[in-house]
Image: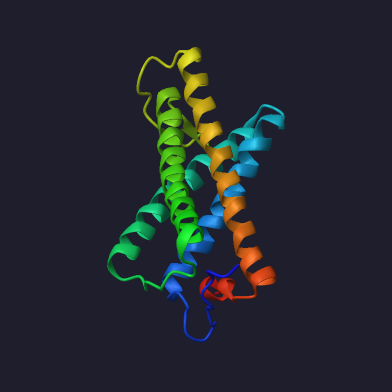
Amino acid sequence: MGNQQPVHSGTAHYDRTTVWLHWTTVGLIVVLWVIGQTADALPRGPFRSGVWSVHVLLGIATGFVLVTRIAWRATFGRVLPPANTGILYAIAKATHLALYVLLAVVVALGVADALYRGFNLFGLWSLPQVGTGDAATRHSINDWHGLAANLTVLVAAFHGLAAVLHQYVWRDHLIARMAP
């Protein structure tokens, strides 16, 4: 396509903190989504409860990473020129915004879910129960959390596919911007 601007790996590279925060977010999303999709298949008991406790703690960590990413980007993070112009630039901006918003929604709904049910972490510490804890509301919050998580993974897959397209079809070295 004619509107790609070449990106040279030696000149256009995000700073280490931005790169670290990006790939940490990717890792957290993958682990959290896999746990969310598989934990209920485990037999009830301490192991399953422990896996869900890991999910809750990693979800909270994701919230902190997200806030840190936003703060870093707004203050110290290196800003690079857009890799594209026109419609591809607009799609990239919309995709990044969607990822940030979806991540925030997933984290907020996850916290709401844990607080509404009064989640017990590893049998050592209990999050306070906020609300009545009735099953219908609990399931509704959990369903919205799962939907937002699935949408996040879908948009993130689109984002990753676009990066691969840049790298291997357009050969503009875009992935080098986010290389560790």
